[in-house]
Length: 131
Image (tube, rainbow, N blue to C red; front, top):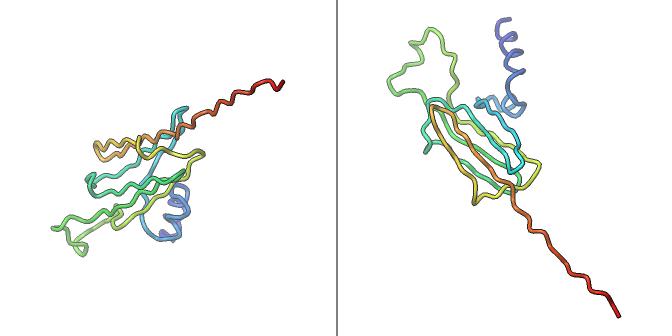
C-alpha cells in the first residue's frame, strides 16, 4: 500500500518518460525568453564532466549517471531515498537552437543552460518597376 501511495505522489512530479523507464530523472525548469531558452537542472552530487549535453536543431538531450559513494554499503542503509544510476532527459523547443552559442554554468548542483535561438537573416529583395 505504501508503495502505491509513493508511486502516485511521484507521478505528479516526474515526466512520463522517466516513469516508463524506471530510471531517475533530475528535476528541471525550462522557460523561453525572446532571445532563446533557459534550462535549469538539479544535479546534486555530479561534477560537470559527468554530464553530457547534446543540442541538435530544436532539441536538447542531457545524459549522465549518479553513483553511490564507494564506501557506502546498500545493505547497511536504514533508509535510501536518493536515486542513483543513469539518467537521460530530452527537451524539444518551439524554435531551432544555435549550438555554437549555447552556454552552460554548473554551480552548487544546478546546471543552467542558455540556448539562443538561431538568428534567421531576413532576405531583402529589391523589386524594380518593369518598363
